[in-house]
Structures are given as C-alpha cells and as structure tokens.
Length: 198
Ligand code: GAR
Image 1: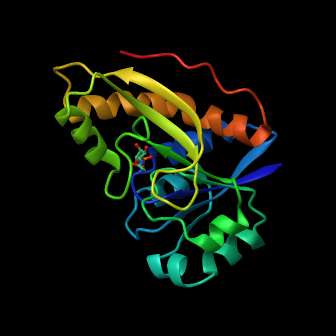
Image 2: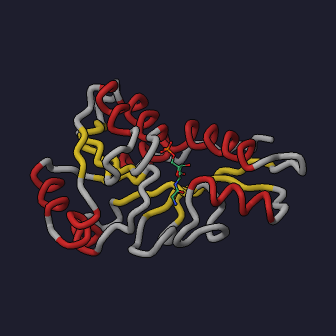
C-alpha cells in the first residue's frame, strides 16, 4: 500500500477529492493531511472524512526537521501539494526525490511563480484575454511551479468569462484529473486521456 500525505493551505477541495477517490483503493491510501494555516478549512474537511490532520507552522517547515521526521515516522511514500502555498524546503525534497507532486491552476510555464496562486492566476488569465487555460500537474523541484510536467488539461476562456467563471472550469478539471493522475504516477500506469472542456 502506497501512503500519501496531502499538504494544503486553505479550502481543501482537492484534498477532499483525492481522499474520496482513494477511499476504496487497495493500492493507495491518504495517510494524513498536513496544513500550514491554523484556520485552514481543509482541517474540517479532514475531520469529516475521518482522516488524520496535523498543523505545522512556517517555522516547523523552514527551520526544523519536524515535518520530515513526522513523514518518515509514518512511512509516507508521496507528498501531494493541493493548494499548498509554502515553498517545500530542501530537506523534504531531498528525502522524497521525484515524490512531491503539485497541481497548478494554469498551463505552466504561463502564470506560475511566487504570488501566482488560486484566484490571482485566474484574474491574470482574464486580464490578458487568454483564449485558453488549464491545469498542470508536475513534480516539484524546489522552485515555485517548476519541475517536470506530468500532465496538462485545457479549457477554453470565453471573452465574457470572469475570473470566477475560469475558476469554476479549473475546479472541474482538477476534480476530474488530479486523483487519477496521482494514481498513474504512483502506480506507474498510463495517464488519463485528456479532453478539452469549453
Ligand atoms: C487549486 O486551484 C490549486 O490548483 C491552486 O490552489 C487551489 C486550491 O484549492 N494551487 C495553486 O495555485 C498553487 N500555486 P483547494 O484548497 O480548494 O484545493
């Protein structure tokens, strides 16, 4: 059984979808949800799902081995960043080479980097009159939104779309593709077939 630790900073819709997707799996289990903002709603979602959650502050991540020790003690295999807004520190990346997976709500390398997260991304996409956007699932390499791309899926952006409209389309793509892409990476299976949504 491969164990996942999900790392999240906020609402946690992706964390929930991933947890529900793997709930009946005989191969992959969400072992713990880690969050770095005390009031993150993802902690409530974890409780509702019956999944253990644990808060670690910025200092715990950046100035100590507390998080790494915790992950090792639990024998976690992969880290899944699902709306996690802190840069993953070197000690953790070294311990999990090619085993930290992030989702970004745009077609990287466009609209990536520090400060480009969540709604900021969709606002920039609309402001620049993009005709399409999408999601990127990639291996984390120590820089914001960089590392080998494993999967992208696209959706159209209409001239009348607001940032909220784009966010809704992105959430649909995330819901459909993030869990099976994680499964493909962890189990070494083919990626899901991409389809465009309008
Ligand atoms: C998701 O859209 C995810 O792609 C994005 O944050 C949102 C979290 O939503 N991640 C980034 O922007 C990372 N740079 P959620 O908390 O409801 O899953």
